[in-house]
Length: 115
Image 1: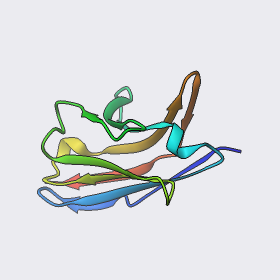
Image 2: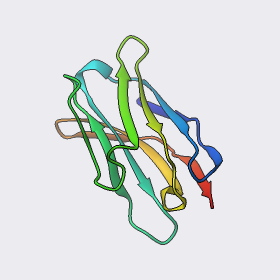
Image 3: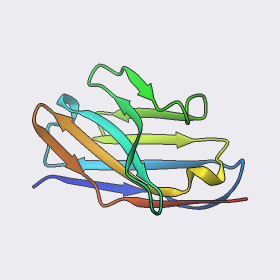
């Protein structure tokens, strides 16, 4: 079955960095676009970043210039490098895999940024 396992979340001070990882199994990883979304308390889940099978990326305006998404097809893993973190980045971060009508989600990893 499909599994997306996020890791790397935690507590960090404002201005700090974290690197999230999402290890995938049960999917043709190299054939799937991969993305990161986040959900803050009391808010809807929102798009953060996406990387296509060809390596093209796009980002939410709120994280452009601070976050970088990348993928390693050999390791079946997608990463989210988060720099210059702000308290408003506090949320549960979810990994997403998408191909055609197939859409999969991980269980999420908590990121908390203290001021």
